[in-house]
Every structure is written in C-alpha cells, then in structure tokens.
Image 1 (cartoon, helix red, strand yellow):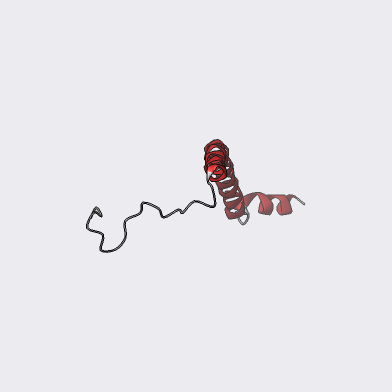
Image 2 (cartoon, one colour):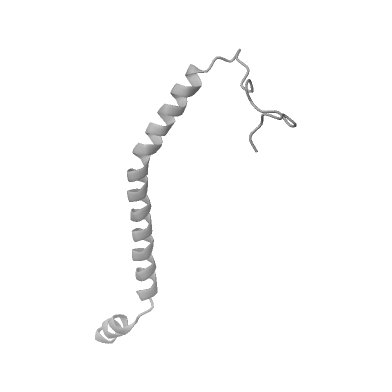
Length: 76
C-alpha cells in the first residue's frame, strides 16, 4: 500500500491535465468578463439602431439626394 501511494505521489501524469484545466478556466472567465463589460454598450447601440429604423418612413426614397455616376456635382 505504501509503494502504491509513493508511486502515485511521484507520478506527474496528471500535471498537464491540471494545467490545461486551469488555463481553460482562466480563458472562460476572461471571456465572461469581456462579455459583461461589452454587453451594456451593445444593448445601447441596439436601442439606437431600433429607434432610427422605427423613425424611417418606408415610402421615402432612401437614395434621394445621392450622387449618381457622371454627376458633375458629385464629390470625388
């Protein structure tokens, strides 16, 4: 029994697995932290886009006032 315990204690077979588990947990934690920080700004931007789209009249020509090819008044 003592030899089995000494063999287990001196073995490093699971050390790489532990390293990968810790590294993966750190990456997941960092991803969640970034998502928490960015989500507020994304929600604000989404609200602004929604308000702008709701204010648009679908009967209006979206290209009215746009320069056409060959227009001498177009800005290059």
